[in-house]
Length: 561
Image (tube, rainbow, N blue to C red; front, side):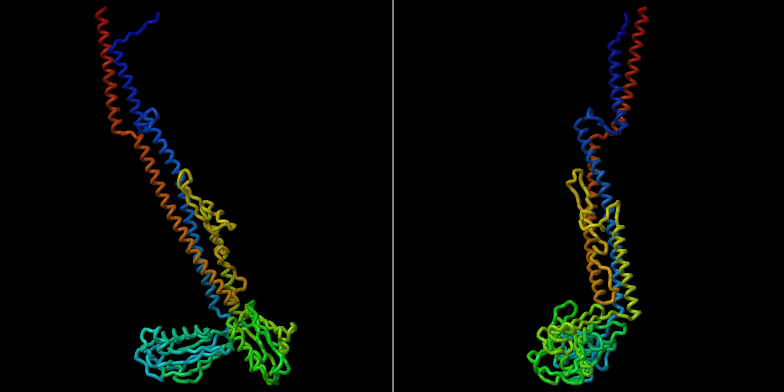
């Protein structure tokens, strides 16, 4: 029969007390080790599951934070790329401007007034009317009127008087040289801009034709006036200047009719019949020149020379705003030929002259239906070794810079995402998608661009900058590209601000969630430490009490023996 241990009530109570104390001490030690007062749902179900949800969301947002950070770096990489591309565009623009500065065309004609006494380097003082000591002129009661005529019969009148100047000057009694030049240019522009006005370094008023070449003749003639601005007063003598041919080998488009015997040293009869021709410059509209007495009474004679026919052609050319000043007829009475040529030079100039459908008389271009005598001419680009070589080298440099633009765009990527380059036209190919919450209901799509030189709208140079038009086209494309780059940089900047704000918000929300979860579960270390000390003391006392109780029982047993 097994023996049984019988415990007294005091001993049993002490043992139960020790058991409770040990359990509480274990709980306290657990809280101290984890620094949490809620470690499981058994501790506090409400707080435990609430804290768990907060911690889970905080973890989700933390994983999104890495993607947001990468997105910021991707935008920064694109911004760096745009900055470098802008520098290359500026360099390409500088290259094109250098090419434009290398003269590959003819020089214009100029007409300059006689040297006059000057109070300072920017005054226009003549001998006809005394000027103020400060170099200004009094136009309150004076005037200067003159005309400017080019070699093609185009003319413009410039009137400097009280009526014209008052709305445009500060003081009509003290009109400055700059104000005179501005008013002259305003009137010249309004009348077709056959010339421009400017000041020389020594203060002379100068007129320069807008045409080029030896046929770019310019004449300034006085009609009336009481004030001298450098060309005299009253009906002053005409001042004439002619342009010079290009020395770089470039040439105008020229179409010369076959020599007609009746024009060579003799006369041509247009009292009956029609010698009309058609003229086309480049791919523009065709202009019909009616050469008959019905269209021009001066042609209704039997003693016409080649120069008379050329004059009639020029009259009709100049009356057409689309071709005026661009084509001119030139006659050679001795050879009996009439030539038409473009006023501009270069390889992009093409001129075609054919007989008109009504033509019955041949002046060197055939009659109606006779295509064998149709004539066309194409201008020549510069053949001068220096200018051609320089422009060609600059064109190659320009194209190399365009290749560099494409390379920079391809290399401006981060973590495999490139906002500046894609192979196709679909923006989805390089759109950056950034997610801001765990359900992807809050996001930002940053659309990428195609910023190689083709995407920027810049074309490579194929004509070696042979013509100014090609250079100007390149400059226009570069200007548009620079504007596009600035606009896109602003767009990326706005997107970067949004992403940085969302990054800061996400970090803030993560902190709020972590603090909230901790508030629900964290233990007060001071309190738990005090509890531990109290429980350890309680445990020690319980052990002592149990020991005393056992000793009392042993004493009773000894007495019974």
